[in-house]
Image 1: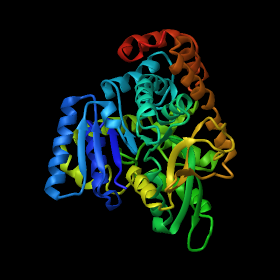
Image 2 (image 1 turned 30 degrees about the vertical axis):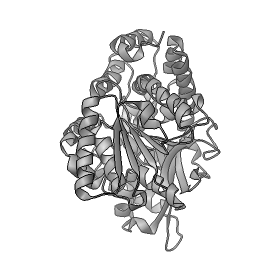
Image 3 (image 1 turned 45 degrees about the horizontal axis):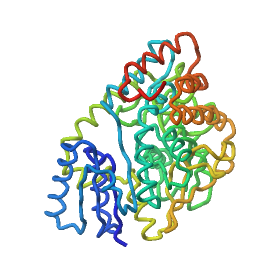
Length: 432
C-alpha cells in the first residue's frame, strides 16, 4: 500500500517540515504521497518548495503535493494529521492567560485548562469541526490524528459531533518519562516497562517494572524522585517548574508526567504551590524557540519533529501499515473502560497497541483513586464546553466557566467573559 498522508496546517514550519522529515526518514512509508494543505498560500508555497527540492536532491521515493483546496487535499486520504491554530497564536495565548488573572481568577497558565483553556478551545474547535465535516463527506474511513491543543477538549467535541470518525489525539508529554526514568533509576529505558495515563497534560505514571527481575520500580521512584527532580532539568527552562509537581509526588504518591504549567491548569489549589517564575520562564523560552525554528528548514527535514522520536505520529502510521503490534506510551481516545473512574464519553490519555486494525487502548487497572478524583473534576467542563461550542450559547460558556474547578469566584465573571468575547470577536462571534 502506498498511502496518501494529508497534513492540514502544513504551512507551519515546525509541524509541516518536521512531519515531512519524519515521513521521509521512515522506510515503512516509502512510496507514500504527502499532501500539504494550508489556508496561507505564502507559507504553504514556502514549505512545499523547500520540501520538494530536498526530496528531489536526496532521491527519496515520495510524491509531494500542495493545495489550498481542502476538498482536494482530502481526496482519497488514508491518514490525516491536523495541527492548526487561529490568529496570532502567542498574542491570543497571552490574552487567555492574563485577562482572567486581571479579574481575580488564579490560573497558573492559560493554554489547556482553566478559563484560558476554555477560550482557546472556543476559538479552535469550530474550525476543527469544519475540517471534520469535510472529512465525513470525502474520506470518512481515514485515520485522523490531531496535534492541536487543547487536546482533550478538541477530541471530546469532535467525537461528540462526529462519533463515527476515527479521530485521535497525540501529544509528546509522556516523553519526559523516557528522558528522566533511566537517570532516576540508573537503568536503560529498554530495561523498564511502564504505563502512564489520565487526561492530556494531567497524566501520571501508573506502573513501572524492571524487566529483568519483574520487580516493582515505583518504590524506588517515590524514594529517589524528590531529590532527583529538585535538580533535574525541565523542558526549556533548566530546573524550574516543579513545585506543584513535587507536591503531587509527595501527597498523592504518584509521578506526574509533566510540569507545573500544564498539570497546574486543572487543579484548583495549584496557584498556592506552583513555580510561577519557572512557568513564565518556560513560556518565554518556548515562545522564542518556536519563533526561531522557522529558520531551520533543513534540520527539520533531516531529523523530523524530534530526532529522539518523541513525536510518535509516523511510527503509529507505520505500525498500522506493517501490522507491528507494538505498544505506544500515550494516545488520546474515548474512554472505552480504560480508566474505570471516568465516564465513557470522556477522552483519556492511555497506552495503546498498534496493528493493522488501528489503535487499541490499554486498560489502566487499578488507577490511583485519589488522583482519579482530580480527573473527575474535569468531566463537567468537557461536557459543558462541547455543548457551548455546538450551540454557540453564551449562557453555556458562562456555565462552563462556573463548573471549572479553577474558577473560584463569580463576581465580575460575566464582565470577564464579555471582555474576552470582545477582544477575540473575530474568532468568537458565533457565541451569542
